[in-house]
Image (cartoon, rainbow, N blue to C red; front, side, top):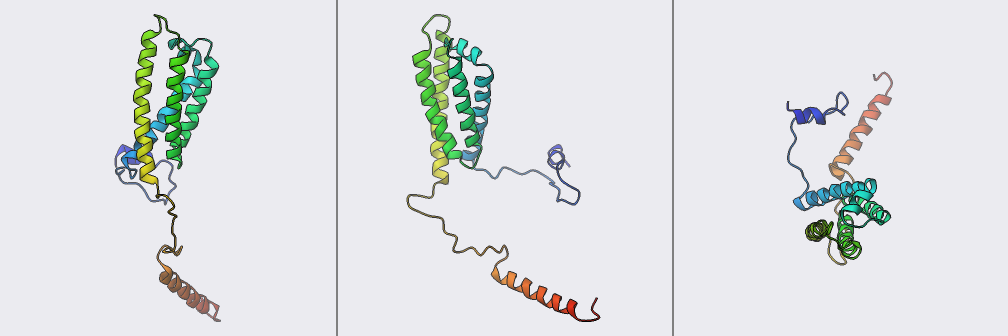
Length: 187
């Protein structure tokens, strides 16, 4: 048994089925990318919340630490949504945040020799991340959209995992068993 299967079996009670080997993820590639961007958002948001002075100083935005913290909270919110079942909403909020970040860095960052390189690098990184976020948001939205005006249909579902006939058969067996158990002398 491999290390991975030992790790996944830690939280299992005795008698629970054991995982013998871990297989590939059942998530499509676009969902894995969306999840990775969600984790990236959480990390970036924590950095902006916990070290706003460092971020602001690097970009020549001294005095705007509160704004950096607010953007960190926004990143954490987008990350949480990107990791939830509302992944498309989280990714689109990342796209909107990217536009806001680019506009803010271009407007607020001071144009001095000390930070010119850092600001240019930050803008290049922001543009690259914005492109990835936009592509991911479009792909995840397309993957999970049902189309305009279409509604989910559950008319082919019974609520019984083995079908309605199997449930009726099980009910008849229970009825027969209960009838035998109720007879005097049956044990």
